[in-house]
Image (cartoon, rainbow, N blue to C red):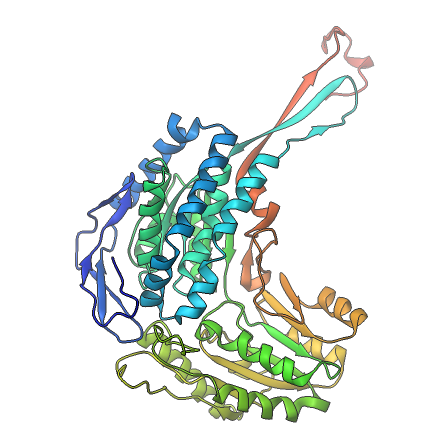
Length: 509
């Protein structure tokens, strides 16, 4: 799909799955509409894959994994190819970020900035592949004990709509660098850039079957992929309930799992931190991507002595955010992904009112001239929010944040940890000792001190409790794509016969 710099209209294409290095027809029923969330217009149609489609993709992946072209490729050749894929990604960056903006509604400035980082993920893991070492383990007696690592096999990956390429590449880069293969089920809302990237990588030399794509709905195509008997690892980014369903299915075939699920990020703002800077971070953390991130700064927990000033300044800052056409370079926030998601955000605004919170700004659909059918919501702030309110406890997944006062450090941590989730947390303070104390005590897999949304391919990413299991990025993710084999070699020439002198043997094994 070719996207002009500021599209007025798009031809509606009918797309298929991507298997064995090419697009193939799939599904046996009605096609699914893919819409531009800024206009509501249909921009593509995709199939809802069947069990036969899933099985075809899995067979292709297994053949590639066991075949000479990919499975027989040595580490250095594979690292060179992964670096070549990073170059190909970079060469197609302009078309990719425009297509992603069209498909998920993030402003072009956001999308360009995010996608430009992604080639680094491939280069990092290619470097890690070259530098990896297996272990030689000191053991008792005249033995040499060493480990061998072999690629785990087929990685099934279910990706969400909010960051289609970024979340895909966090997994895809390590899959390719370790010699695994993958079958990806992108969100039915945002499959376009995933398909485009598969074409780019195939043209750049990636062997057929290494990167397959099956399209369709999560409860059908996604479920069938997760429960397929031939997967070796499941990677899923999505809601907690979807994770429970998919994880239960994958557990039946003893697949490894990495899941990044829901979040309700607490941001603890202490009174020694500059309020204006804290407000700027609050707006960024809460409203980037229209708040549709698992690490959205959705709970601001602010020290009582600066609480009123923080709320007043956050109100003023939020009202300056320009909501509009994602292709307009002056736009600062685009639509949410769908009418369903818009209605969810507005429903939570209703919960805030009903539970007694104070609406500071937003809470209604936004009107964008020329985009009457788009899914826009005004960035929303509620204050005086108590920890038992639904808007404090439940993930909204939209441009929506709450503000709650706290008394002291212990109170801040109590409020921050009062959640079933544990993905990310943030701390705003100039007190170095306090920053480290709070970071150690808060329930989260990721903690930002005086920052937000920062990630790096070398830094592990993931959560605890209802926010999932496992880690993406870093050596943690790399190592989880291998099976480890222990090899024990006897280096002595001593005779052995357990049954000749059993009583005098010092150890059984």
